[in-house]
Every structure is written in structure tokens, then in C-alpha cells.
Image 1 (cartoon, rainbow, N blue to C red):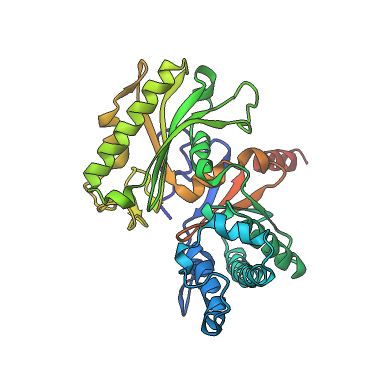
Image 2: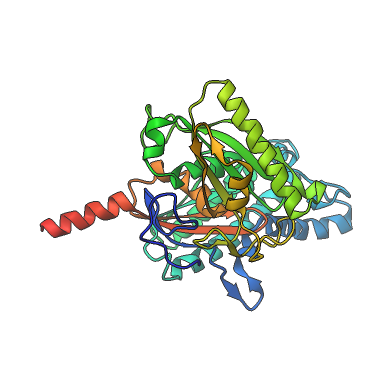
Length: 363
């Protein structure tokens, strides 16, 4: 993980360990065994490999309900439709794959829980694109049952916000509280290996100061994997997307904060550089000569009447942060994001932690 930045809570440090609502105990842990990274056993690709493994013997006999269609070309909506369909064989095939995937996810989760950073975790939120399907929901629920049957006192729950929006909404929790007193929205960016999503996130802070009612007012998606741009081309496109959102927000009367929160893959250093984990982004984002926050400030020096401030953190952290309002009954909790890989982060709620410390001091 990036070097310690626990003394900073505001907008000064990127990849900070201490944020306004939580301490980030760890993120982007890469667990390995003799077969490689454990996260690869519980990714979107892992489910496809498992499903393909179940299809293989059926395909030989001409009994594969999916015919000759490749597993990679079967979308989530198609799989979900089969689960509620009348083809018992196809339903049974999917349930077999779900069970195997749940066993893998349970194995990987146990390994995380055995690490020092994840000790005493009470709840785990599961996000990522895989969660946004009935297949994903069943796999998460089955994993929860497996872990509970083994006596582990931890619960697995699907992330509450739509996975496409959770990373944007989570960026609210990177911002200092004073941002919300004079503004009703922020700009947020969620950078992925295939897509870049930008949005105007409405805080609804007056209705819910803990940000539980935050929503994405407007967003724009660019699938950069289709265009294969250069790094500079990607930044230029990102700046244009943000400028268009600023214009739309101002035209609609929003009081947009001079703040941009960025969710990005990899280990984020305190100076805003990316240490590792950005290999799927267009160009070399880990270069010492590249600094995304500075590039955005150069392209958008002011928002409204104030200088632009930018704060960047890991994408798994950002997704997890969207759950902060709903995790206040726990002291320690984590997030796993199932997508191209398995993102991860573990948090300690600062309010719960400080309340317990205060109680002990009184005793």
C-alpha cells in the first residue's frame, strides 16, 4: 500500500489512510498461492471459466443449452433470464456454476480474513459489475451461507448503490465536511480498465448529513477500450467530459463544489502518482512523468469562483466508501469488488472507534 498519510483528513493527500469518516486499514492487497493471484479465483473471468467447464461435457453430447455460443458472449441479462425460465437443464447448469463460484469466493474471503489487515472484520460489502445481476446476488448469498456454516462471524451483503454509480458516490466521502455546507454537488470520476465514467453527484446533505441519500444527477460514460486512445488523448477526453458536466450542472442551478473526486485502479501514492496496478489503462499511467490530478487542474483550473481541488483514491476504496452511511453499526468492515479482478479494501469507522476510545478513557 502507499506510504502512510494518517495525519491528513482533508483534500491535501491522495490515497489517504485517514478520511473524514473512516480509516482505510488496507486496500489493493494481492494475495498469492502456487497458482497465482487469489483474486483471479473470484473474478468475472473466473465465473466464465467455471460455467464453461460445466458446459464442456454437455457440448460434446450436444446437450449444451447455450449451443455453440461462447461463454464470453453470454451477457448478464441473458443468464438472469434463464434463471427464471422453463429450461430446467439450463437453470441447473447455472446453479452448478454459481455453487462452484461461491465456494471459490468463500475460499478467497477466508484468506483475506486471515490477514492481519482484515482481522476482526464484521461485515463485507460485495460490489463490482458482477454484483449487478441475479447470478451475482445468488453467488454472494450462497457465499454468505457457506461462511456462516463454518462459524465465521462475518456477513456478506451486496453493495446498495448501483455498481456503476457506487464509485462516483463514494467520492463524496473523500471530501472534507465543509464542502457540503456551501455546495450541493461535486464532480466525480470513476476510471476503469474498459470505461471512464464521470458524474455530477448530488449530496442531498440537508436531507441526510451522513450522505445516505446521495445520488448521481447526471453522468457520462466513455468506453475507452474501444477507441484505444493514447494517455494524453484519454486525459483530453476526460477533461471535455467534465467541462460538459460543469456546464450542465450550472445551467440547472446546482451549486457545484470546486472539488473533483477520482476513483482509479491501483495503489495511489500520497502525491497523486500511481505506484502500480494501472496496467489496464490507456498508456503508461504509472510513469513518474504523469500526474492525473495536476492534468485535471491544468484543464479545469477553476469551478465557479474557486480554484479546483482534486483528490484521487483507489477504485475499490471509492466503491466501499459509498457504504459508509449503512455500516455505522460496525467498527471494522470491508469491500470486495468483483470485476476484471477482485478489488478489496478494509475500513475502520472513525466515529465508532473514537466513541469506544472515549468510553474506555472515562472508565
